[in-house]
Amino acid sequence: MTTRLPKSNTAELLRWLFRRRRRLRVTGDSMLPLLQPGDEVLVDPRAYRERQPAPGDLVVARHPYQTGIKLVKRVKNVDDHGRCLLIGDNPLYSSDSRSFGRIAPENILGRVTSRFG
Image 1: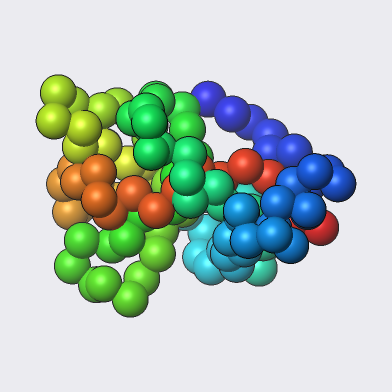
Image 2: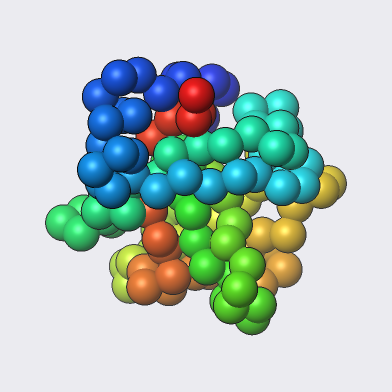
């Protein structure tokens, strides 16, 4: 499990400027202590074009029942159909696969690469 997330370096910031990364602001306490509410992260939307997420990856996913909500969660495991079991690092404050089930591959929007800034 990743216990720290690197701060964006020059290469990551350039990827963001050239639209190879997306920026997302964290809300809620589900990823404490790694991510605080208000933290911003960079996300690689192309990360899973040629491979599946791996256990331990931090991903951004579309909520399966509330389509306007994006979630930052950790991949616990991936089944044979590519569906991910997503869990928050702070389970007492996390809405995750324990309540809504596995996430289909098309709802995984990218991999968190770094903390913005």
